[in-house]
Amino acid sequence: MLELIGVSKNFRDSDVITQALQPIDLTVQLGEFISFIGPSGSGKTTLLNVLGLLETPCSGDYVFAGKNVSTLNDKEKSRLRNREIGYVFQSFHLLPDFCVYDNIEMPLRYSKMHSNLRRKRVWGLLEQVGLSDFAKYKPSQLSGGQQQKAAIARALVTEPAVILADEPTGNLDLNSSAEVMALLTTLNQQGTTILMATHNLDLAQQSKRVIEVRDGVIKERCLVHYASRWGIEL
Image (tube, rainbow, N blue to C red; front, side):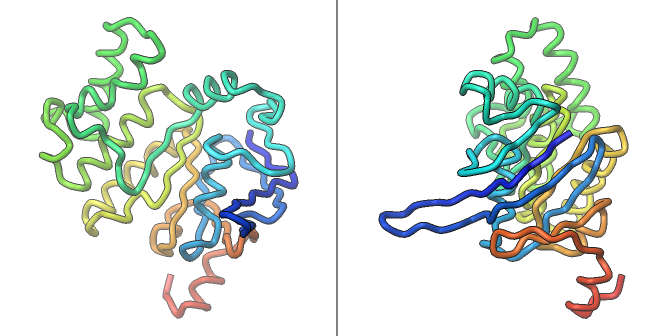
């Protein structure tokens, strides 16, 4: 479904060039749940941003559902991003002046979907994530876990094939983290492809595949490797 072929990414700051991603190859099949694990600054967020069409590679090809992204213009990339990819960030990125319902509905307003269909889909998602009673609350009136559930519902509202989650539990307590991970696992069981960046081994255990990102290089790993290296029992 997704394929990176020799993809690299550099950033320039004045005269300094930082290679965030070395040329990498990666294939993601439909319905996978992959954790990209590594320390801060390892390149895992850059990798997610490339996969999510938020960053443009400096070299290589990115094939998304049979389409070579490098051949698409900005409008075509935007359409692909809006229809096929949902984003969940550590800091939620909910609009503070809008209620939960309006935050979730927002992406559908840009798609020009009929209001009745928008209403049905938003309420369905509110029920799915357990926020039906909080539809008219502002983000500041919610707990961290509730805000993240609202962010997940917003990511799902366009019915994307892929969810990109960048440290989705990084700002949450243990109970809220468990609830969010349970929701992501359920979504994956229903067929949604989940690509998650994390430095938390406990979270990575809940995915089906683990890929280490270190110094811009990716390497497939099994959880036993991390457990033995970090002295953790699985």
